[in-house]
Length: 78
Image (cartoon, rainbow, N blue to C red; front, side):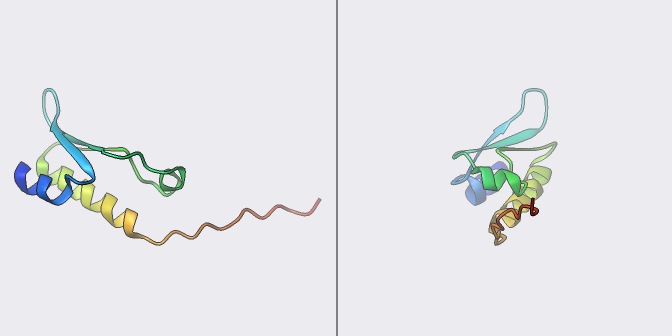
C-alpha cells in the first residue's frame, strides 16, 4: 500500500499524515456524531505502517456502514 493509494481511497473522509518519528495517522475531515462515538467510531486512526493504517481505516469504514438502531432507553417502573 502506497501513500497515494491510501489517499485515493480515503482522502474524502480522512486527512492522512506521517507521524513525527515513525508511523502514520489519519484525522477525520468532519467531526463524527455522538451516536457515532457511542458505536465506536474514532476521529483519529493510527498505524505503524501504511498497511496497518489502511487496515484500521478499512475497519472504521466497515463500522460506519453498519445500520445502527437507536433504541430508546426503557426506564424501570417506580
